[in-house]
Length: 103
Image 1 (cartoon, one colour):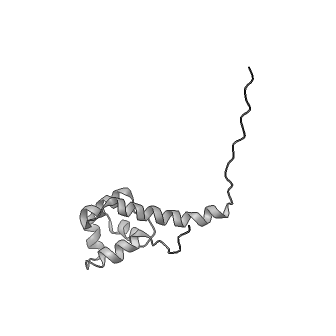
Image 2: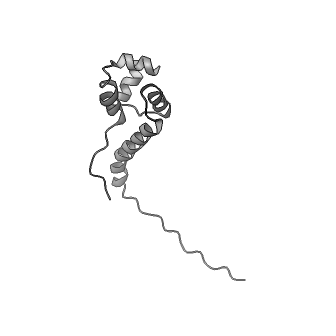
Image 3: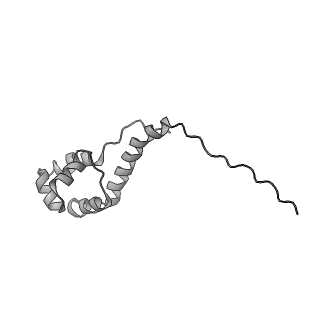
């Protein structure tokens, strides 16, 4: 079954549902996470993935689990990659039947 609803980049969710919800500026959040402002900005604007390390930082500072952020990132990445792979029209490999060995 194909999913109809689009996955959002998890950086957008972090920006809107966490950082803005707490009334933080990007610089403040970057300081809390101990990352550079440009690094966090790239994530928040969907230009960079949430890495495993970043997901651990987010969980430590804002709560939740790193696994949630990683699942969101994986789901987003799969959604983005699927149309490119579909265009390749790949076909499943079917191994040839092995011939019986005669003694």
